[in-house]
Length: 191
Image (cartoon, rainbow, N blue to C red; front, side, top):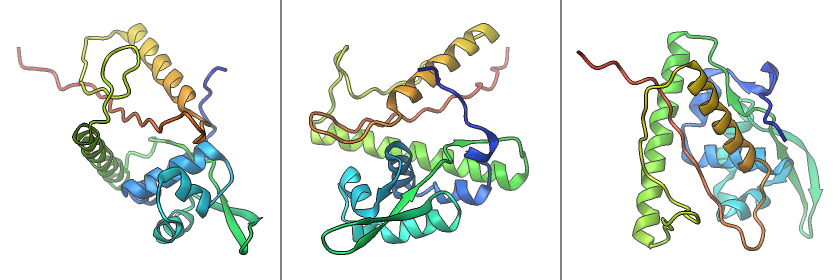
């Protein structure tokens, strides 16, 4: 399947939504809902290894800013459970207002800081698998001088990674893999 960018009404373009995702837990919840479709708080908790009670305030905030939508209920043995969905996935960066720039910059800092924390924990626990081809951990900052054709090819690879990770629920024999990417044009060095 070829990755297709969503239409504008299915993208995150509100600075308040981006700021809400600066919380690593809210970002993780949002990612689970995106990949699972329609899920209850209990199901989100199972995916993240968290108790449902610890998720309510985060989910309330995601609903408040419009990143999650309550789409109904599921019957359980105890009571009906609210079910949430989201169709908002990618950031749109057309609005270059100060507020939008600050929100995206805050998300970048938060996301990459959390990546560093999680990578450190992975090594400290001894969970990292590094040998190719079965590595599940990678650290690096590869860089190169790319022309427009190279950049287009790089973006195709990024889209292929996103597509590979999409819609993959937790199931026996799987482990949750997170890839944090930060791609940017490096400031030119003085000659």
